[in-house]
Image (cartoon, rainbow, N blue to C red; front, side, top):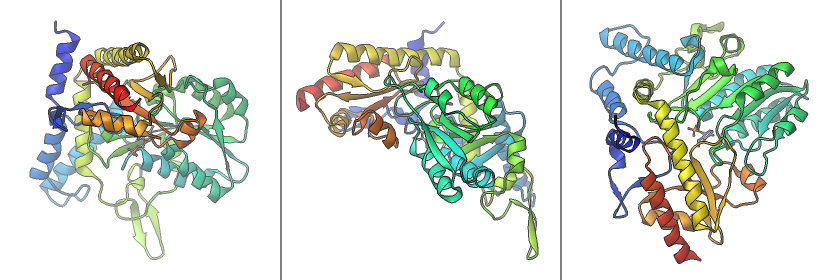
Length: 409
Ligand code: PMP
């Protein structure tokens, strides 16, 4: 039996971008929350599509178009199975998490919300799960209400329960916080939502790459994620919605593909999911995402979950040993996101010094400015780990921080 370290090395071999030097040092890539690298299989699947089939879908005019359609719709089924949706019709292609949320706000939101209604979001949301709702509130007169976050980065479930009332029509929360790593208790949230008959949208951008997600088991109404954080290509994403909700929603954008019949007297709309997919879609992106999912399913995911846990535990332990580190986000249930401040140093300076050592992290507000204000920090340094990171890389991060400490303090 291979040990975990060997297994991770094997996985690393599938990701060509990991094997390069940056600033004269071997790359240590700890910015997976921003985007993950892509395995050869994904890069090859996209290239192969353009090299061979490269035709538009749903036109049925020739053999290659049929082949493109088949691959494109098979990709939808791969996603459907991956997240446990009942039907492929419930999988809508988007450009990413951001577009998925905007779609729900512009269609379900405008149809169902009016003055006096409430939308609950948590205090740890990414801007993409805040601003579309603020825009919707401006348009409808609905009100945005914030579920508080506790000092350790957990969602305040008591505070949440107090906010639940009949005016709450929608709850939009992240599954995993990109800035804290907190894994939110979606089943608890859904349970309370059902009593109140509120609709639940979950932002799964930071979840799907870290653990299995089953939308049916979670019983969420909408679930959104991006391909590029799941080892797939950029410009591609998924909106899952329950069929009955999607059916009742008006279309998002108008154009080709989304119509059943078009005349100057009026237009009727296509069936699901095409009603929401105006224009030529990102065909290669869908094939690339499906390939990423198949790649991930071919790995020992249980072992990888454990491996990521050991990476984050190791980071917390080394932080305690090094001292002078303020960790932002210490929820008991957290993904492999290590967000911190080196006391006395600005996060941007720490990031620059790490970059000089070939260590890629993200610094700043992580598109969660309200959360940064909640913790009264200008931003943090964030090391976000993935399946291919090693304990040695976490060691290197802390060696880098030791150097940064000597230089900056
Ligand atoms: N939500 C969360 C929790 C995220 O981390 C991100 C990306 N940082 C997004 C939404 C937005 O994703 P995208 O830019 O791929 O649309």
